[in-house]
Length: 272
Image (tube, rainbow, N blue to C red; front, top):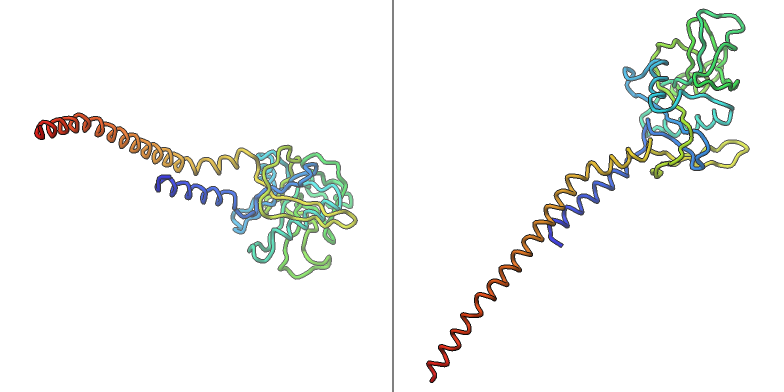
């Protein structure tokens, strides 16, 4: 193989390995390997200025074919907690920051005891599961709900401000969690794996995947197009040089044959 072709092929392989070896970070979709459970995405923003309001979070999820998170039961709540724990390990640099979920209420200023019953899920779920922090919801002007995530805060009357729910003003800026229908044609799992470890249930293997097959192909194919073109050019140049050399050699042999015959005849005549 031509040295230039070998070098270009090696470079292409290195680039492809990098495309498949990206670490899983906030913003990746998380799906179950049995493809029957919903998929989720934890959108965490380290910069406070990048966090979004409830309506912005809702629009962001819906623009990708999902919805803000609705929770059907305690098992799903525990699953989300385990994912957040994995996402916010100390080495990731992710710390305090609540997450919008899809629970909210319509109307203004309800402060009566009926206020908790006015909350509904933005995706239309009829789930009655709730996980309020102590003395929540406080109602009033706070109509949208977050899942607490403040691991560095001192515990309150209801314990640590972790994973329980709190109503907040809808224009406040937070992270958010999206929920999607199960993946029908999942992509190839990447390196990080989560386990639900739900009490009374077998461990369910969960893999993190890209949003779809087409984005993966785009990430792999587009960066390698220039390399493929260079490989084709180098291969074409190599073939052209080989054909040219072979043609020149044939012409040399053809041209030298009559000359050799003349030299032989002249030698014979001189001897005679």
